[in-house]
Amino acid sequence: MQRWGDAGPLVVCVHGLGSSRRGWARIAERLGDRYRVVAYDQRGHGDSRVQRPMTFERSVADLADVVASLGEPVHALVGHSWGGAVVVAGGRQLDVARVVAIDPMLRVKAGVWSTQTLPEYRRQVAQPLVEREASIRRSFSALPEIEIESKLHATRRLAIEPIEALGADNDIDGGRWDLRELVAAYPKPLLFALADPKRSVVPDDERDEFRAGGGDRVRIEVFAGASHSLQRDAFERVMPVVEAFLAG
Image (cartoon, rainbow, N blue to C red; front, side, top):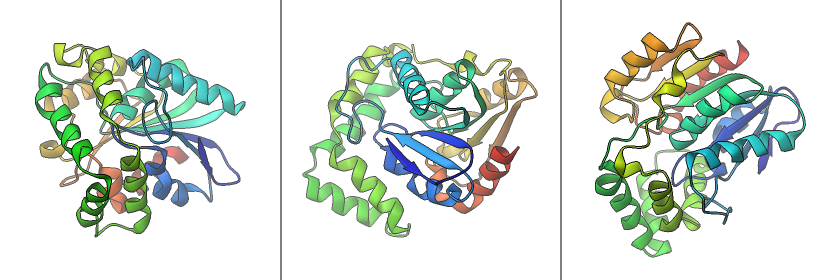
């Protein structure tokens, strides 16, 4: 677990697949004058070697354990992708005031995991570490060093086993990763910060479903042109929206 900021309400951040707690460093530094930000490595990621079970229920229970360990009220949960789904579920269960879900992985269609997700991660893991790190520096050369370092931290410990286990333990290829019902009549303020529809894991029909069924506490903001990791590549557009939402 890592902490930023010395005063203010607590914000707990949950990273996505193939990432780590360090992925929140840039956001945490921006919020650190007003909030205390906490991020942790989900099981099998970053410096966490804990793996099975990799069920969604266990991921949400891990979040609950982190929140409980802090011993004081948490103002907001913020999550991206896999972590976005975790905070949407956690927000229903935990005593938190607000939830921010950044392009959350709330549904994976049957067969997508084995044909698209796993091959990409297997390709990454098959590369020697020095090649992986060089590739990251090339791919993200336009970003601040803090973002590059966060990607390097994640890739240094990246292993395929927890990613395979996430798919198997949740029967993702069988279409069992369908968490859309978590959004229905959401009980507290929930911000969806979504990527461009062409680059998002949340398709248009699901966005319409969330608008119709989420209730008046659900707000959806779409960032045209932004990728799935919009908190990174559209940082200056995303953060004012997130900050205003956190401030209520």
